Length: 473
Ligand code: FAD
Image (cartoon, rainbow, N blue to C red; front, side, top):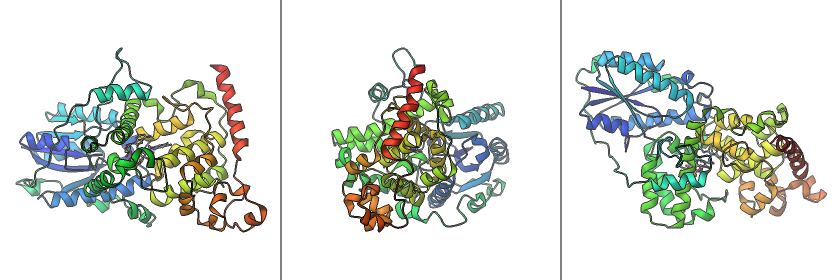
């Protein structure tokens, strides 16, 4: 009997529960991928995600071919496509791993019902989280809104997993002619036509092998010093696993177990807690799906956000605000599809506090440009920084990007890497060029001499705006 294994954000063979269900159920797995961005509601994948996905699908297909199989790609609509493939090959089952984006979850529920009514065994699995978002709840059975108790409860529920390895060989269906062949991967038009993405591939290798290499590198080189180095954007102190985890190129269960097995005490705990934030983000998205574009804290409904002027938003997007640490981050994002977490916080804070632009505008830009763009993590990250979310930094706590840069990039190494224009200034002046003495500042060309909004001025305006929210509370 044939089972369709419907790949989505689980682009791996190792420890893949849907594939495992097919293999252990005695089915011949037929691997399919269906491209249907229009079914993802208001959040179809952005340009950087598409570029990554193209390479990741290619890597998966290569892996499958080395094992006697192949990945068949199709255009949506998803339900009709799954149904017609199932009929054509006389499949008995369809297996997939769950996704948690509200629009996708709703679609998948409909599809599951339809397939079952058509007499197929349709089952979904948890292939991307340590815990299902509904498995962790308070003693009263409610969702958590604060991270620390959430993660304490979740960790208490952790059991050493039984990790699954895919077989070395898959049998091809006997009557290959009956199998719809779909379209070649190139036919999905995911790869960018103009080569703006080369900077991403200097840093990342999409696919299962790239993910496994990133994990081993991290365990060997960075885990021991993670609690300290993870905040320093100039060094490779974190795992850079985020796009691999988003696309499911590596099992998060395997990652967590590897961190535990490394036996690094506190460093391991700090690292696991980051995976915990990822779990928390999915927990929040599941329980509060409206937060993808609305504030979780309703008091912000009529917060006096500034109308984003095109010039200001564009300056932020392209790393030209005049605040070096913010601009360095935004350029890292533009050129590599990724930004260091500490700098994400500073760039997001400058946008939502100093510029008082609603976080939604920032979230949209990140969505389009991050290779790890993830609806759960991105929504939580933005709402956390903006002060509108769960367990968020309160709005009145405004990061000073200059002090933060001095603390976490003390030699200005990160700033200098992304803003070569600043090379004419001594490193000590690269954090806040506008404070440099005039003769020095005169030498600075091609970079703003003043920030679009100054440190004190932006902070005061933000606090004044926040006072209105507080009065309502
Ligand atoms: P590591 O430090 O090595 O952490 C390991 C893994 O834990 C990460 O790969 C990631 O999956 C998870 N993780 C770490 N920190 C967080 C966090 N704060 N929230 C949720 N998960 C976390 N992360 C995304 O994956 N996609 C996004 O779209 C995204 N948008 C963000 C937007 C803003 C405004 C902010 C402040 C953060 C955002 N993050 C997002 C979270 C975080 O910045 C990245 O996950 C992290 O920088 C990825 O680098 P890493 O893999 O080296 O992380």
